[in-house]
Image (tube, rainbow, N blue to C red; front, side, top):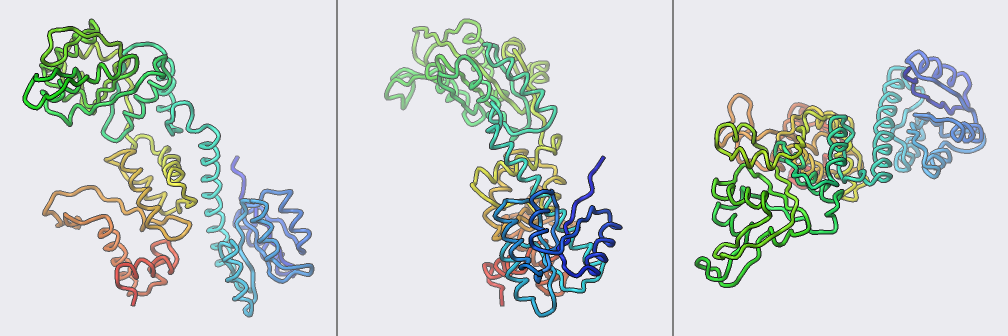
Length: 448
């Protein structure tokens, strides 16, 4: 059963406090009332309140004292200040001390419930952020270094832990950006070879003749430019793990030589007739359908079966949306940022398809951390657009050649135009404060 959000109303005017209690109770909140600083302090320590409505003028002190206590005790209670018409300056001071909003008495019931609802949502997000940060700190992202709360990914990691101590080859499948190299490193780190080297090569980045030289090495004079002997990656990775990324790009000649190494542990440097031996565990990775390539003859079928000791298939990020927030928080933590994701920014992240997967999310979060001047990242800090073909731009599509900063600027200007240039309304529509909007316009030379 879902628990109603708890609100503490701190107000010495008993008639007003009863009106507020009834209004919030009818709106679905659990409400307690305190009439003094001492009583409120006790209740805050004993209870778990989502929101505290704090009157500034109390018989034994000020609501600011309670606001300071909430901060000092590390309570996850959002504070909304209740103030008279003449105390607006003090309310501004309260906002600087951590209050999330203020209401001028007597506030309309509709405005009261709206502000409390916004404070509850802000607090919920802060609690969720803290819980995830605590799990990240406590487990150090688990024993694999992989951040996930997705059941499918958890099952994959369980398989990884069982396979890692063996010497079986591992085939890691998944779209670009899903974290295939991270999985390969996790296999190595959990294996009996973890004291040996972990070596990775992107097979798609090299033509076949250079790829052969990189893998097997070459002798001096083997070809033009071979001025000295060079050991190959099979020699470098001896006793450890060799990751062959994008193995679906292998040409047939290299495929045959790789198969020999897997079968015998024997290979030759380019330009040499002396066989060499190496003990490596192979982890192959690809974003292609290797089984289909083997069936059509594009990839050697016998090599495919050799590589496919155990297959670990990583789902795309759009299929594990529950991991978007934990990953985003992890990337913020990586950047040593204290910022949090606002509700509208999180909604934007969760509603996006992520064609670039986890790698794209990492770049979006890093950029948002830099662009955001405040403590809460808003939707304007995470402009999400899929690439469009050069020269397109009809039917509402964005024109080609724009940088992310230009896309963001266009979006902000569009919102400003829709709000008749009124910065206050535009800032509310963007989910940011006016200062953040002003700073952006100042940087873009349009703050006049």
